[in-house]
Length: 93
Image (tube, rainbow, N blue to C red):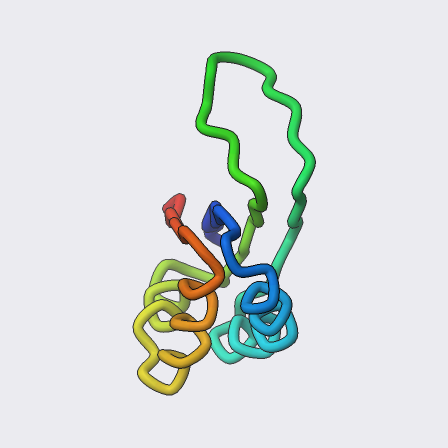
């Protein structure tokens, strides 16, 4: 199991709402799922750049995560997420 950290800065809430409607199915195509998502944070140490929204995603392995990120059939869904605002996703593997 590997995890990915997704950090979003929302400038288009409607696009984010539309993305949420399709994100789970898109993740599931490659064995992924949302483990946790939140818009409320408590800084435990340091001075991080706290996002507006963050999610912890899981995938069976690195290849599955990479396949999700690069799946040409999901390009419209990834574009929808990006149109919601700033979007950074980091694989922890």
